[in-house]
Length: 353
Image (cartoon, rainbow, N blue to C red; front, side, top):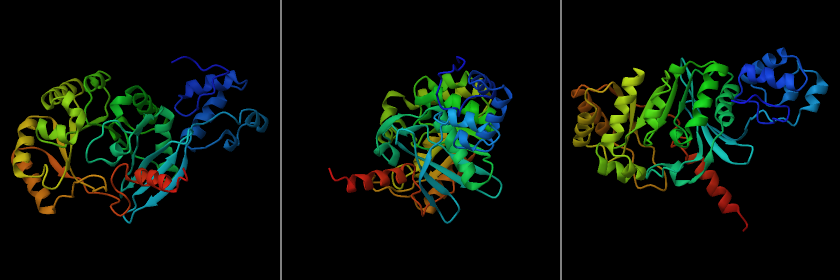
């Protein structure tokens, strides 16, 4: 990365301590100000240079136009279980979702990697909302800091399972992962990147030899059904995807988490479980069964409890490690992209044009 110049007014969030030290010296301050800036950015979560009270007031005034890269909370919805969904407004007025998920021992942030999503999965609210652009590294890091600030609690885990396909924005996602690990201080083993699968990208990610968790969204037990649910799957056959996943395991030594959204009457029958088990036997993996959260624009329903339990039992009978993910925030637009979709509809409804 090129060293910032005196005219470099990119957002400061996402830069390392050494980069910030260079930046402050180029703005006529001693290098130790860069260490202070790093602390106030990542540990205190400031939103403007004016808030950094250890800096000289005149210097703060002179550089007040420099963006830190923070978003604005447009909407905040808290569910009965404590899960909080946020609509965040970015610097160009685009809207994204992020989610804070608290448990007794951890605080997980589900971050978005794109504004919308181009994958157009048939059951997904985000895909129904279209795609606008990739998120920059600072816009991803900001989501973690926003949740941390709002909860007044350190974030322990970050999952790239929000809006967007992370492997279509790999360079920025890798930069964000580096900063979340290095600057925010969250261990790589507490970071998860989820993908529906992009040709060549899983192998590319494997070469970085990160200690993150890779989650691959299958959602189907055979290629035909997968193409029905995930249009892009026609360009990435299931056998090829699984071969790339095996390569990832061999290269990194890390097991893969396979995500399987369970849709009532579509992919939740015993023969589906048997097909899935056939594909994954002998794999260093874990299967996450995710009961579907219904949305208005998709003709799918949440599975019955006994059906998903039976599906789990079939997988375990074949020796697979699997679990059912407990849905969070069901009373507050639990499906990914649902809150943003509702906001978009509200704007369209009140648009006088």
